Every structure is written in C-alpha cells, then in structure tokens.
Length: 191
Image (tube, rainbow, N blue to C red; front, side, top):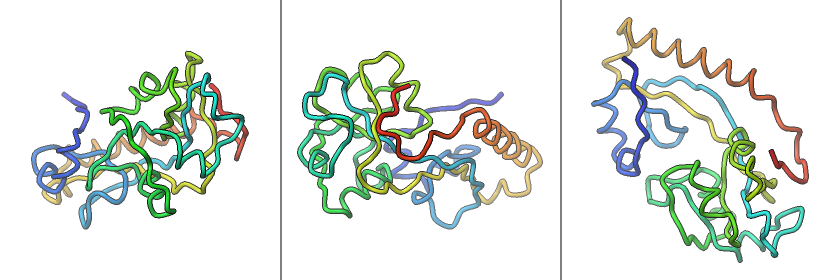
C-alpha cells in the first residue's frame, strides 16, 4: 500500500529525524542536507490576489508586496516557501496576517480581502477556477521551486524503494508533459 500524508510544520522543522520513519519526504531543495534524493520537477511562483482587491490592477509592484497583508503557507524558521524567504532578502518584510496548512486553502483566505499569497504556477489555474482569486506575475524574479523526493540512506539499495523512486519520477515527468508551461510574464494568469 502506498500512503501519502500531508507534512506538517513539525515534520519540516524536524525533517532529518522524520526521514527515518517514512519511505520518503517530498520537500523542495533547501530543507534536507546531504541525504539521497531525486529531483521530481521544477516550478515557479505567482501571486494570488482577490479579483475584488481594489489596490491591485493588472500587475503587482514591490511596494504593494510591502503594503498588503499576506497569507503564508509556511511561516517558521525552518518551514518557509523559497519565494517568501526571497522577499525578505530583497528587503520586503511581508506583513503576514494568516498562516494556512496547505496551498489549497489560500483562495479561501484571500477571496474578498486585500491579502496576497504565493503559489506554484502549475497549481494556480485550479485555485483561480472559481473566479474569486486571480494569479499575477511576481514583481521580482522569484527563485523557482524544485520539488525533490528525499529518503534515508538505508533505502538506497532497497529494491522496493528503487521501484518507488522510479514510479514517482515517471509520474512527475508525465505531470510536466500534461501541464503545459504558461507563457513567460503574462499580465494575468487567471485559469
């Protein structure tokens, strides 16, 4: 049986311990050092805003990112989105109002408000489908997210684990083919 569980902030904060109790963790680069892994896919980031947000037109500015309240998906010292951390490096200290457990919850925390959030481009069309939120390009060159399968070294030569890694790599390569890339820098990415 194959079971997928949503990881928690505690799982991310203690990933080096957690990796010993599971077959693998799906986490971006930057969370687990020096462990066996395979890259599954790369994606970039877009910003979600409410379609009714009176402060945002067809594009976002760095000033708006500083002024508007945010919904973050992860907001802890060891659990963060790479693009969210990059904002801080660029001198934008996001005013985080709400932290949610999942990217799927973002539209519900953004719709009808002046909040903003970050989401992977491939997920954006599903989150904007209801029309309550829309996706816009980030006004900075957001670092891409590289999703990775990590595992404990004890599984390196395990035949069943080798099969699992191959299965996930194949599924992610099919995802890349099934999800056409969005043209670079469109003004709006509404799904």
